Length: 555
Image (cartoon, rainbow, N blue to C red; front, side):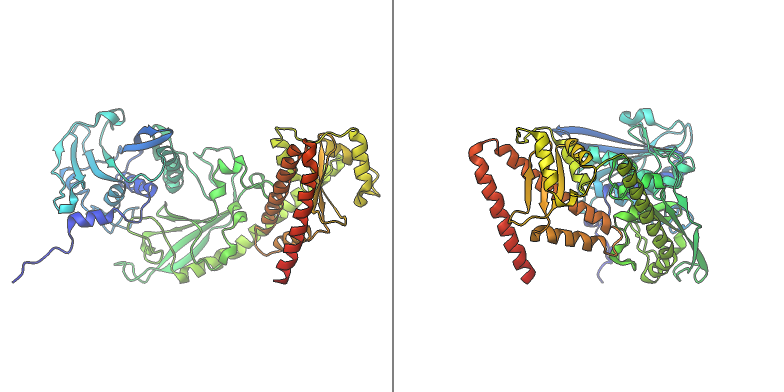
C-alpha cells in the first residue's frame, strides 16, 4: 500500500503564496492587525532604507514593534504557521483566518523574525521563518530561543510585554521607498482611523500617524482638527440574514450601518477646483468611492465594481460626499471578505439593497453641490461686474497664461492705445457698449485675452498685438470653432454629474493649446522675413481644418 501524501508541498506552496493578492500597504496592515488583537496601545513601524541611486530608496528591512500582551513559547513557535491562530474563526475581533501576518510578510520579503515576551521581566524569545531555500521543501520554523532584542530598534523596545516582527531580505519592492513610507501614513490613517480615535498610537519612523476620515465628519486626531466637519445624515440601518456557515448565528438578522456625509461648503469651493492644494492635502481628491469597515477596520475603499448606479457614480463630483458601510464578521460571506482582509465586494442582492438605501440621499447631495456652485459663480460674476472686471469667457486659460508668461514675445506696435481702440471699434459685439475703456483696461491687465468674434475668412484664429497685451480672436464662423462650441454645450447638458466641469476643462485645454501656438508664432515673427510665412501657415492651417471637419461631418 502506498504511503499517504501531504496535500501541500510546503516549499513550493510558500513560493506560490508570495503572489497572493496583497500590495505592500495591505501586507503591512496585517502585522498591525496582530498588534491590535494583542491589545497594543502603541505600535511603531520602522523602515530601514538605503539610497543606491539618485533619490531612490531601497527598503532593507521593516520592523513592527508593539506593547501588546506578547506571546508565550508555544504561541511564538506557532505564530508563523499558516492557518494557526489562537483566535481562529473568532468573529469578535478584526482577525479570524490565521494566515494574514505570514502571507503578508512573505509577499514582501524572504525572512521573517519574531521577538516576543509575555512578562515584564521575562526574556525575549525569538523564532524565524526563512524561505530563501524553500524550493526543496526543507523550510522550517525554528524552536524559540532566548535572544537579544535587535540593536537597530532597541530604542523602541517595549518596557513591559510586547512583540517585534522584523521583515528582512526585502526583495519585492515595487516603488520608491520614500513613496511607500509616505503612502503608508495615509493608508494606516484611514484603515485604522477608528482605533486611532479610541487611543491607539501608530508611529512610522517616529512620526505619529494621523487619522483620515472618508466621511470628513470626525476631525479629531487628523492633520486638520480645526476644519469644519462634514454634515452627517441620519444613519441607515439595513438588516441582513446571517449566512448558514456561521455556527450558532445562521438565519438571524444582523445590522449593517450606513453613514453618509456632505462635505462642508467651504472645502467644496467653486466648480472645477477639486484639485487645489486644500483638497489634495486632505486627500479629498481620492474620495470618489465607498469605505467598507469590518468591526471598525477598513477592508475596502474606492468605487464598487458593477455598481447598480452605473458609470455616473464615483465621478469627480462624488468626492464631495462620503459613504461608510460598517458590518460585523457575521456577514463576511455576503461581503465576500478575503482571508487577507484586502477587499470586500457585497454580493449582488446586497449591492442593490445598499444602492436603494443611499441613492435618494446621494442624489440630493449632488443637487445641493451643483446648486451651491451655481450660486457661488453667480455671486462672483456679480461682484466682478460691479468692480468693472471684464470676463471674456476664457478666464481660466488667461489666468494660467498670465502666471506663466515669463518671456515677453509680444510684437511691438507704434501706437498701442490706437491699436486697442481700433480693435474694439471693429468688434461688432462691443458696438453698443458704453464702457469700452474698462474692457481695454482689462486687456491691458494681462498678456493675453481671448475674444470670440465672427469674420469671413479661412482663419479660425488671429492674434492682434497691442504692444505687450495681445488679444487672440476666435472666428466663431469657422467650422472648428462652431464644432467646439457645440461639443461644449453638449457635454455641459449631459446627465453626467461632472459634465459641466469636464466641459470647462476641455475648453481651457483648447484655449491653452491655441495660446501656446500664438506665443510660439509671436516669438518667430520678430524676424520680418518669417512674418509672411507664418500668415500663410495660419491661413492654410485654417483651410485644411475647415475641409477635414466638413468631411468628418459627412462621414
